[in-house]
Length: 185
Figure 1 (tube, helix red, strand yellow):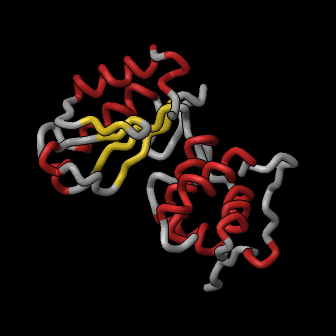
Figure 2 (cartoon, rainbow, N blue to C red):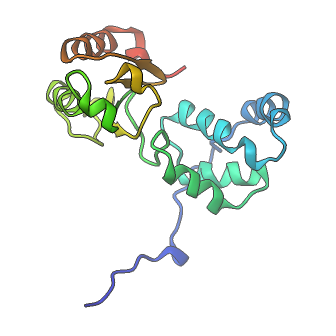
């Protein structure tokens, strides 16, 4: 059996003329983010959060721009983006619903599986998918660190605790009717 390979060494990164990392981002990162960390690598997570919030994903071009700004290896940026659930290279919806699937969230209350199934049914998408109108993305996440209030989910960056199928329905309805669909900060 042959092992399938991908052309990593010759892969071309799609680029747009306008950079993702803007001058305003650079200034803010230099003034507010970098001083908080002993090394520039330490600032990677908050910098990536900014990019994710601005574009609802971290495109490969943006990863290269972040690496250049921080003076770190592009592989460090890609490793971070690909490791953490909150980052994605595929654009997400305006509202990302991240349901925790840890053991506590699965065993407490209605359970994370019931929440994921209900959200998928209501939105007409599967886990990891985005609605056709670009409003919602549904993801399953590792532990969100709120086991004592399980089951929990993130709607964008807001944690919702002690969820039931009914309370999740209300959150989806509120997000649908919110101005600009309750977009990122």
